[in-house]
Each structure stands twice: as C-alpha cells, then as structure tokens.
Length: 454
Image (cartoon, rainbow, N blue to C red; front, side, top):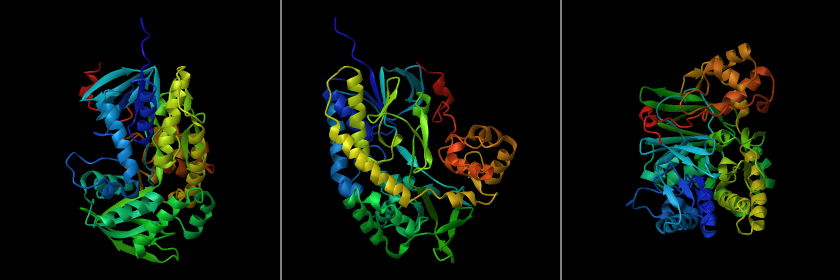
C-alpha cells in the first residue's frame, strides 16, 4: 500500500503562490491553492472578468509578459488537474494544523501537513484630517478599480502618499484618460536621493520609475505636508497641503487615494505561530524565517507577506518556500542558489526604496487630536493619546482602552499610525510599543457561515 501523499496547502494565488505551486506540481505533488480572487494573479496581476476587452499590455504595461506567463502557468496546471484551485475562498483562521475557510457562504475545515502562506500585502495608509469621508480610498483600491473594471473612482482624482505605487497609479490613471488633479508625495527630493545607492541594484526599474514620474509633469509635487481633506456630504471637495517651500495650497478634487508603499499581510502568519521582529526600514512588524522562508511547524512564508520585495521577489520567494517544503518532506527539488542571490539584490533595492520614500512619522505624530485614527470604530487621535496616559505604551493595552484596531479591518489601516502616536506620547520608539495580537476571524464572515462549518 502506498503512502498517503502529504497535504500541502498554499494560501494566495499571486506571483509567490503560483511559483510555489509550479515547483510542487513539478515534484509530483498536488497542492491545494486557496485564493480570495475569482482568477489567479494576485493584486499585482489581477485579472478582469471574462470577456473584458482590454489587453494585457493595457492592463499591466511593461509587466504584461510576466503577468501573462504566470496566468498561463497556473491555468494550465489547474486545467490538467495537477492542483486543486479553490477560488473566491478566504482563510479566516488557523489552528492545530487546520485551516478554517470561508467558501460558498459556509465555513469549511481543511487539514494540512505543510502550509505555504503567500498572503501578499495591502496599502500602508496614514490618517489625515478628513480621511474618514466617503470618496477617500487607498491607492490599491484605485488601481483595482482600473484593472478589474476599467474605471476611475472619480471625475477628478487626487493621489497622495509616497512610494512607487503613487507614481504608478498616477500614470495608469492618466493613460486611461482620467483627470488626475495632483500627485502629492510626502517624501522630499533630498530624502529620495538618500536611497539612490540601494536603487542602483535595479537600474532599469529605477529609470522606468523616473520615466513615469516625468509623464506626470507638474502634477507631481515632492516634499509636501498634507493638512487635510475638505469635504461635504457627497465626499471630498479639495485637499489642503503645504508645498516644499511651506506655502499653503488647495487643490480641488472629488476623490482622494492615499498610500505609503505597502503593509505586509501577516494575520494568518500570526495565528500559525510565526515569530515577528520590528523592521525599522519598513516601520512595521514582519515575520521571521530562515532564508528559504521556513517559519517552523511546517509553515513557510513567501512574497510580500514576508518581505516587501515586489513581484519579482515574490516569484523567487515562492520557489524557495516550495523548495524548502520539498526538502523537509525528503523529496528532490530545484536548485535555489540563483534565487537566493537574486533575493539579496532585490532586498538591497527594496531597502533603498524604504529609505527614499519613508513612512511619514513626523506627519502622523503632529496630527490634531480631533483627527479620526480608526475609521472602523471612529476613534480619534486624542482618544488614543489619552489611553496611553491611563495604560502605558503597549499596543494591546491601548487597544483595550480605546478600541483602536477592534474594527472589521483589525488594525490593518490604523495599527502603524497608532503605534507611532503611542510611541510619541510615551517617548519611546515605535518598535517598543509592540504589535496587536492576531485574532480570528481575520476577515469578517456571516454569522450563518458558522452554522454550516464542516
């Protein structure tokens, strides 16, 4: 009687998950791939609905060939039955070697022997006065609407934040014919130049970014300070900001999209028992693994949920995680030396980006008390500051006193700003504040789903 094949589950069908699945399938395994999207590709290579007429070149620009290659790989092995694809499914909890998956409005249990988490990242946002109004989105949301449905989220769109995504979304909207009012970058030119040594690790990519910046023309402004969003009952009316010279500005718009690079999606890694360390370059807590992505207890991490290295890094990290999994199972695997060397180079580039386009710590610390910090629970900056006076500089204690991070996003949008504010109030570094503990379910789910668990 033959041995039962190991149950390997991959969470996420972006670049990391697809490459991990490819390696496992080539080794003769039949992994299960769980993804919240209807079709594989992840956020970066998100696919529109079937019948959508825009070409890959129009959707992904210079990344079109890579996107199509990944889509084709996954579609082929899935059609051949060499993997199990569970789309439109969300893992909402991990415990004792079992995934709890929300699928078809029911909660299902999926045991695993090995688990590869390729959960990606979401926008890293910072609060500004007025950001709680309707019509204020993240940069990722603006990009998803454009990719998935071919629409801009407003008639006159203002983008603000910092990082490559800010420039990319701006140029994509312009190319699609949208009216982009302004692209406001909180990183000053001098600060951007400070990361040039790291950016030299990928000169072609850096030059491509500069070319996109040039297409924005006078819409792009560096070194700004965001003062607030003016809004009426329908949403944004204008954004108030100060330019690099300290002059007050007002730019009319009806939609605002905000984002400061990315925030690793780590809730499942937390529930799976992974350890974390504060990364001062990225100003956030990131999981700890070995160079191959091993986190212990049969769990492996890959992609932006581990290290914020972009799609190229995610592909290689996916291969490494799958190779580590095969090695631990005693199965032959692919050579990993080239992938490890490439990841080291990508890490240098990514840290150059982090230095050039930093988290706006000073802006967050200077927020007025009346600014809404937690949009889910309506908690203000002042209420969080007051909780520190009562409970001290510990993230979970401040959460219990103020309700920051208790809403449906579980701190995805407010935790980093909250840590910055707590640290400022207590006179310590953000890394000393600690991180909010992960809680299940990691996504909202209908109560009725719990009645059909099985």
